[in-house]
Image (cartoon, one colour):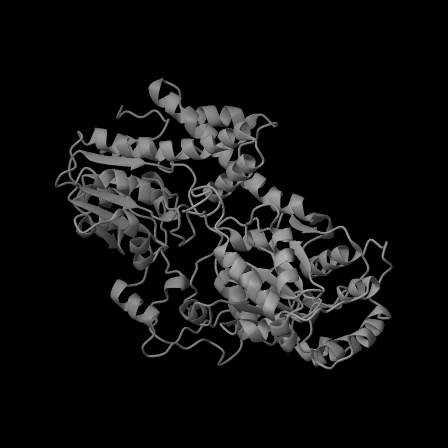
Length: 637
């Protein structure tokens, strides 16, 4: 163990003004870190301005007991010392995992807390390189600007119009790195935001959560984190994971004081930035001990920089872990329920849109998630329902497990039903025919190809040996699409599947067009296209400029205006693979597709299958299309 005097350090901390009594609610344990006269997005001009406190100066001298890690020497603290340890000012956060949760969460936290250094750790150097470049590895509307302000720094202007001419320079406080050991050793808070997919093998295969990556990350934190670190579960994990992590910490670092806090994410891909900037709730679960409450309060203070206090809910860890699964299960249940009714509508004269509108007017039900279609995809709903099912089975509740498993079963059946409808309408003969799929991501405004609804549709169609399956998606990278399809492709079918960067090329000479997701380019009705002059644009994510990606215009975030600092625009290397890919692929366009132009290039009869209910059916029929939907009445029937 290193030579600093832990007992004396605890005496120092226990007299700090930030400490409260053990029975305190902890609401005042840490005062505001940003002057009220300054926008929470701006804060101090320099990180050093908020680090010149006795506590910060002392903590700067603390070193992780690396020797104790290998020897597993005990590290004990008296109860009052332990409580005081978690009353410190959070000034350094490490986020483990630079994926769809870790990256955006870290960026928004860094944006609103300019006095906190936020390190995002990932073992994939390619992913880290992209986070440090103009080519972010994920697409979310508004994310690139938030990342650039926090990562590269910016000249900011206050919200108050009276001081609008007084710029404040923000220094960078968001960093992406593969050096986990250094960051973990300095962090006050460590957020675990790694992937937790469904287990595909062994006990619980197909239902239980695969905790391999999470356990490895937790073990690394246990090895390198310093005493008093608050460890936060951001990943979606099974109930009891907080106890699982605590047991691991006790085995690796016996006696070292840590607190484990559950803080599940409630993000929806495509709107993740809005979900983070304006959350309906922030859930923090912890042990109901004095130190546990203080750890929860320390994390709450980070969010309180921009989230109203009434929206920050502090519960116990079990409730927090289960709440995430239940929220997603409830939403998925509504989707499967309305889709089951769409099948009845297909067999009768009922229209699913009219049914959904009628049910949604009922205030006890509401209109959200009553849109019939292909069902839910992505990496959350199916996985979380499987986890909930396995939890019920493990607790000896087979009826509960069966109930929730049917939500996933209905979802899978809806996709198969849609695919077989395509086959039937094409006279059960796809040999030599071209089928074009518009959309591959499971929803709009995301490039996430995981658990794509299109995969199941393509799997069924390939059994009929079509001449070609053509795919276009305005957000997805072609290499990501092919990677997701690999499990269902073989040497015979691989050559039949092609990804296009242009919707018209994908649909040229097609016998059928299938709308898979609700991306905005597919939504525009033919009537609106004829009556409006829409200027298409190219998204920042697919920059056409080969190497220098400067953005000169001002941006406004939460009422604060930022200008990028001169010379801070990321510059790509000459051999940047993303730039090379853009050159070969061309810039992706967000222009609405012209359905009349697509119809002109198709084979007769012009079949279009709307899996999302986004098309204006009467207008499409005027263009000569035969339209097939799920649960909606059309002339084509």
